[in-house]
Image (cartoon, rainbow, N blue to C red; front, side, top):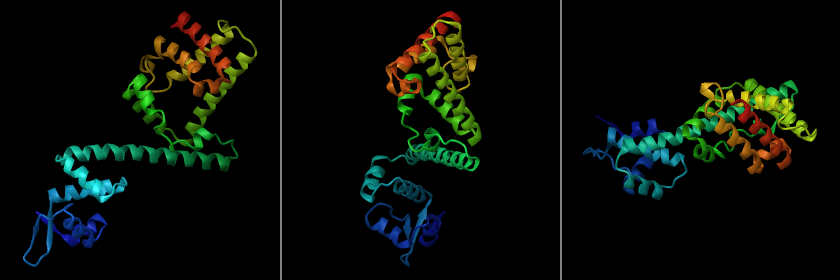
Length: 252
């Protein structure tokens, strides 16, 4: 079965002139040409056209598309790679929608806006490679899916909980509390429970983070200034690390 050029052009949202140009440059020859000169395209040709249109959506020019198609003869495998790219973009768009919904919700309610919420989705894969390298692709996928499944109000509640926990850590460090004392261990337990609620956290499915993960995360809070900033800087992060380490050794 094949389809005439005008119908293919209409279904693809393009023009017959464009399809003829693709033929002229060797990018998409028709399956057959009738005696009348009319071009027809079969299923294989449509699969190739689909790949061309996908690559155009990704911003590639025609020479680059031709090179890509010539280098991949297996249409199904190539389309699978394109599908993964589109799914990643869909995930990004979903997060952008959630970010805007959260902003609208808080603006209408007169609530304080948080930068993390307002900008979520604009650089959604910023730490993806790092997370996957440290804890595996499944960990990133589970936590990312969990976050995107939350409603704007649920995201706001979760971020508020995290913000309050960080503020309590900073206050405890500034007060000079003993990181091995009961107050500090109670904070560490809150931190442990907070992590346990995040799918993808190693050990979370069994009730809570593993001792190795919890202790390793504590060290990372000090080693990585991005995390240390959440706890008032290196000194505050050092207090958090020490308290988490005492908690891990005593109770995990």
